[in-house]
Image (tube, rainbow, N blue to C red):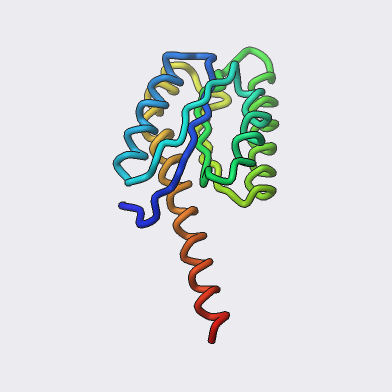
Length: 152
């Protein structure tokens, strides 16, 4: 897949579990370049809970086309990780709709062991980038179609 429109993407990743997050950033960055996109910035936050607040700030930037969030919510002994995953996922879905910009959800877990997370780094990071590039291009095609039809 090669995108026609150069998508400007920010990566927003957790500092928690740096071994996993750092590799996810590397894989996502490679995929952005491979698809012909543009890496606008890489931002790190302490953990998954801080992602929605920083995502809000980033998505308000008019020069940014899309956001990819990356991280790992580990399987714990309590429901903390599950609750965190639901809260972050819901907040990000709301932000996509509010700002009309795609967010690639590249968070592994909750419920994944570290071993499972390590095996999923590349596919999760790549799919999150591919998704935002496809949606950004789809939006461009829809906008162009509507402009053409409105002049007829």
